Image (cartoon, helix red, strand yellow):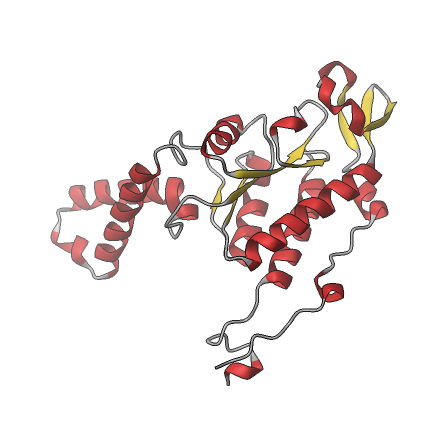
Amino acid sequence: MVNTPKIKEKDKKVKIDTKEMMEAGMHLGHRTSKLHPKMEDFIVGIKNTVHIIDLQKTEKCLQDALNFISELIKSGGTLLIVGTKPPLRNLVQQIAQACNLPYVVERWLGGTFSNFEVILKRVKYLKELEDKKKKGELDKYTKKEKAMIERELTNLKRKFEGVKDMEKIPEAVFICDIVRDKACLKEARMKGIKVVAIVDTNTDPTLVDYPIPANDDAIPSVKYILEKVATVIKKSKIPSSNDKSNPKSK
């Protein structure tokens, strides 16, 4: 029997630096006219008609979110990352793939949580087409038929590539913008899925289980948060007996 190495608490701690957060523009909210009343507790002031987010509170909220994610990963749970805002798509996809997490970077498909069985069927069909293409089975079709299948395959990959290996509804979802992806937030709440999300000054933080008050438009701001998420996930994953990086498995 292989003994699983214990991870010390100090090794799991992720450093959060308010100075770095400020440099990433995490403190810059929306114009004062767009304030959601329930975000008032997270605001420390106004500069040039823009609300300034209290980064001391952001630090605490981010740490709470990271602690939750750490426990989720250690228990074998799944975190789905959702970021469909065009400027953030590549970043979200890169972070998710690096952590081996499912993701959604295109338009949120209604029913992804509430009608997951349909999603599974479409994913199965996608995998079947990919398998046929890999085996060269598409070569038997005419040029026109093959082109139609290729277009269908491209469309399916665009919609389902990020959730292709997600065999069940995730235990939690990380949403980069709860206004843009309000449909995802609504479905998650309806299905009892825990929500971790960036909440800007124009949003309602009470709709989220683990709100992270921060700028959800600036790429450096979202990147800082997602990189902390990636770090805690990697620290929380315990090497298995089949993991070559685990000395005891050799």
